[in-house]
Image 1 (cartoon, one colour):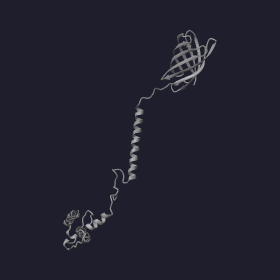
Image 2: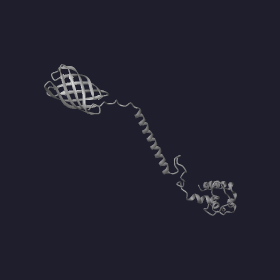
Image 3: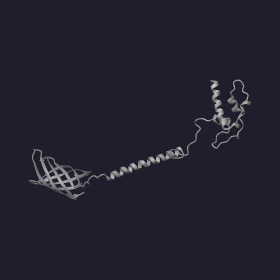
Image 4: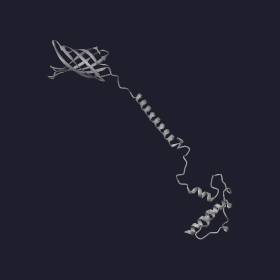
Length: 230
């Protein structure tokens, strides 16, 4: 093993000698003691600096190179001047990456907003809340006074229905879409249901209805309405 090591170091030595034969002592003049290596002896007795120089910043002698390499570790490296094309330091690179991420997110939000603006809007809902007076016409005339409330497209309220000398309390519920209102009126006491399909025109309403009694009778009629207060 020692013999192989001597051969390897000798080959290395010959490489150095071919580059600059003046940098070392003559091997014939070096005395090697017991347990000593000829290569180590020659490295230790190499001549001083200034004999050999190069433009790449390498050590002038093997001895100097060994001294320089002795204290180096794999952690001896310099921060590159730029990080993957971003910043000159880890902090600036991170800041630029965050800025790019925020710009991407902002672009996504803008795209979503544009898509929302291009999507068809919901149909406009007419206003139907307020105090209404209706006239229902079938085999007789009935007059209904309603206080209607509106929440979005839904309407509901309470009031009175007068027929001849009789007055009944009523409740109402329904929905509005575009300029159409479907309104159900239910009378208390003598229970009847009046399902109205009305067309709205500002403060007026007109249309038809179908009526149902608690005993199972059905009939139809026409309705006229006027909003007297909002």
